[in-house]
Image (tube, rainbow, N blue to C red):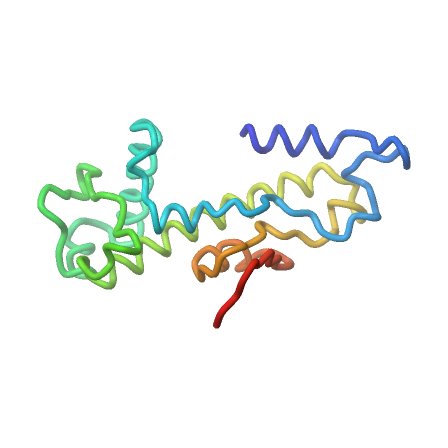
Length: 181
C-alpha cells in the first residue's frame, strides 16, 4: 500500500516544464517499478532469518497457503516431494520457507522447484499489481496508461530474478556490470 501511495503521489505531480502530470507525459519511453530491487535474488540466496519475526511468519503462512492450494493437503505435498521435514505440518502452517539456493541439495528437487516458483510468482504478482495501479493513474490512451513497463533492472545473473522481472513485463532492463554465459 505504501508503494501504491508513492506511485500515486509521483504520477500526479505536475511537470513544471510541460504543465502535464507525470502520468500523462508522452516523452517517457519506459516506466520502471524498481531499480535493482533484487528481492527474488535475496530471498532465494539469503533467506529470511534476518527479517523481523512478524514478516517472516506472514510469508511462511502465505507459503503454506500456496502449498495447500497447489496440493490440497499434506498427503498431496508428501506425494509431490517425497517427504516433509520433522515438525513440518501443512495443516498447522509449519512448513518452513525454503530451501535456499545453498541448501537445495539437502531437499527434494520438487520442493526446491516449488519454493522458487512460489517466490517468483509472489514477486511477479506484486509487480503486475503495481503496474495496474500505475496505469490507472493515467489518462486512457496516453502516458503511463500505454507506455511499456519494466519491473526491475537486473545487475547480477540470476534466472529466477530475471523471470520475476521480465516474465510479464513489457520490456526487460539489464544494468549488468558483467555478464558471463
